[in-house]
Figure (cartoon, rainbow, N blue to C red):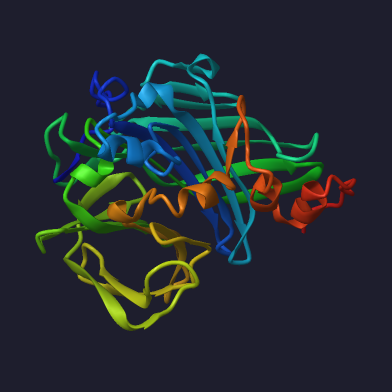
Amino acid sequence: MLQRTQPDTNPHEDALLRPGGFAWWYVDLVDEKGDGLVLIWAWGLPFLPGLARDAREGRPTLPRARPALSFALYEGGVCTCYLLQEFDEDDVQSDLRSRFQIGGATLEIHRRAKDKWPENIDIHAIFDLAIPGSEGRVRGELHATGPVLTGGPLGPQYAAHVWSPQLVGAPGTATLDIDGRRRTLTGRVYQDRNESTVPLHDHGIHHWWWGRLSLADRTLLWYRLHHRDGHVEEHLLDVALDGCARPCAAPATLARPTRWTFFGPRCPRYLELVDGDGQPHQVALDAPIDDSPFYQRLRMRSDQGGFGWAERVIPDAIDPDWMRPLVRMRVHNTTGANSFWLPLFAGPIQTRIRRLLRLPTPTRALP
């Protein structure tokens, strides 16, 4: 069962030391046009090739031995730059509370007192990442400040599967320089942590949905887990601009019709969320911008003008033998061997073919 904990709790002391466990810190931004980016600092990220196979075969990996970083930029409903990089343990420095450095990316999370409750939380991310197949870099930073999340139903500090949202819907700005192409994004920022001391496929989950939708006066958080025994577990929060969370008034409804996807299972086209005041929100789910048999990311669009992200994860579909070589094409091992095809699936979309063929990549401004 998923447990939401207070934002000021530390990860379990075994989060990086228990074989097969995982921990990740997630930050995203979405602007008023639905463009945005996602950054993840992770140890034992379940999607890394070979990790789930080793756990299923009785030789689970220590999470601290597989640190990774993910960067994704979304523009116009398309992922225009993607990086999933894996590093050695020596490339990591972190106190697992307020500072997380993996390779060329650092995330700092600082709480500071205000004159009255609630406290504020500052998120500052800086990144300088290699682009496979070229000398180019993905550089930039993201900053957001807002009230720390308070209220809502909470579970114990430590559990088999912990979800800890900290900053929800705060204003933020990201500045990017991608191989000389510059872009600034201003929007709403969300940050949370997920952790577990057991492998993801041992949680009894058939699949889960997660999403966050930022509206003018609130953010709606949605986490639904469909367990293999048929039980459905749902966590729904209505978070005000002051960070105060309360339960939503009714379960989320995934509406038909559904759409086929190229790689993954069928996806609903619409979602209805009912906020804490009982007001329904009709939400369109765009076609997946990341699509695979085990993971899908979709953009959410509210009938009231808000945007956000949704994702679906299917743990039992992660890391089958036939898919592992394909996943390796997307993972940049910064200290080891990589797939010849890596430049075709990583880095800015505009230069992938040129980088695969080792041709010069001209610099032009991002729109």
